Length: 171
Image (cartoon, rainbow, N blue to C red; front, side, top):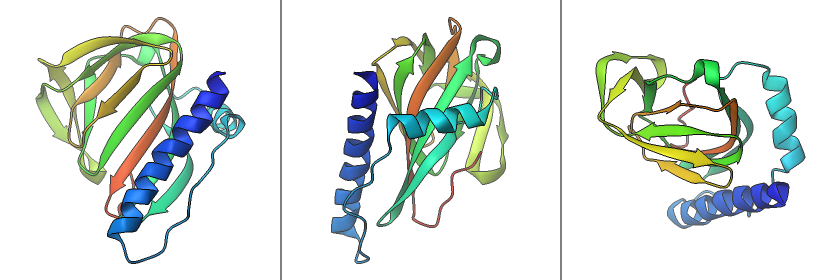
């Protein structure tokens, strides 16, 4: 059931972005892209135990944007209030395993500019929400966000809409 939902959600997310982008761009785009649950889990296994990097399973050109289908995980040990904001992309998380807290918004205390347009720092005055399997979080471009209070591990599908076709997502 979860695998079916992941595949449908990924196809819908990518399909919607492709449809909108196709209307905006003169260049032809693919009519749709499929990423299987097995493909996502294989990418996650290959990523190893690094709990702060989301791994791209597929990059889909979508008119003026790129859509990245990622799989990510966070562990209890790596969950802090140190967060990130991305200047070039919007993210959509869909939790497929585990539970924890996601904090979004607020401001950074002592922000640090990083390569690729990322800003990092400790988040203050953000909104914290408990998330669990099936929940979806949409994180607009340039919004501080982080995970905390993870029970053991959170695994999530991460769709990134990278604004500007030439843009590559920062790591």
